[in-house]
Length: 510
Image (cartoon, rainbow, N blue to C red; front, top):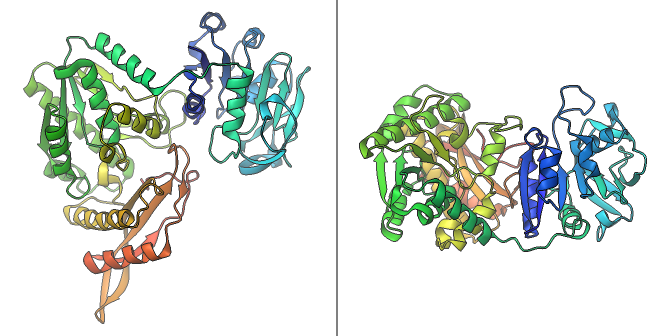
């Protein structure tokens, strides 16, 4: 099996690069720049190497560097953003501060004929995000693309099979990014396209069957896509040694707790224990307004509940979680900068009784998790369910979480989801939900003054959740949703629609 090495220098999109490679049915392996040597790379028989982006300036002494000998291995190399600048630096080119010529966002790219740009128009849109640029290319290289502000948007030494792009081909905003990466891994690296998702399932089951043999594992099953797939995958590996615990913190969507219990106990016959803990969580959240504090409280309380249940069940040293890669990246695990903490990652207390954390999906994106679920035989109604954060509605209520405010949001959210489904737009909008803000506004109902909460509707369209566009829902649909919520949910007097894409925003409000 041919494989590509993604050498991670701390960029936010490192795993997205690997995912784009895997879309071409080629296995991609991510290694931190400081956890692999040139000799190890040489012995691993990689067909190509991709340097990721990163937040540093390559000319700073404390920035991540690598042994220049990696460029002499006769293995094709592609540098992206910081990786582009690093190749220039390693080859004695010059990298300078962009000062007034830095670029962020969609940018018009002018490319020239080169194997890297095969089947890419000479003018296309790329996604830039840089403060530095290659001001002098190394000897043997030629410029193969530019923008109005960046004289070296891409460079190549085709003789040594070294390529570098200042922009990000891995994000969806770069029009022909997938083609560029395909050109590199398929044509330039000459990889065989024989890696399939079945391979991931087989390798993961084999790994945990050996690693967890004879050990009991406690899984946090929420009923969402991630934990559901993790449960079925681990069940396939260790069977009855997997104990699934469903903590109903009361912050789920309307009627969701009952649905989770019925589905997994009835349809899959999993060893499921349901714990009704709404009052416990609401007590802990009383008076708390800060979103990060809410996340930490909910995350810690989850673990406390698990530990209590583990003690009742006997000795269980291993906790399984449905963490996927966007959770890991946005929580700053590894080299990446922290955007926000996630329940499965940042909510873990420092002192816990579990000796090991198992996260079988931590290298996958949402759409890949869904594909695994389908391969495992999980019904579409579960595999295609809406993504839902670990802290639940606790982070979709801006400000304090109370029983009254929770009830308002559950009803508003249910109406919004019902109308989107009725309009047949579930596959157009990849994630959609309501947010209860802490803003109250004046309204008029029945000739009387009202003073209720403002609800924000949020819907995004994406294929990886690392980037997302706000969904252009029909005005008639939004009008129907607004009318129903205001008329059916007493205490809400105004509806707004969020038209922020990711980036610069995140999918969730908190």
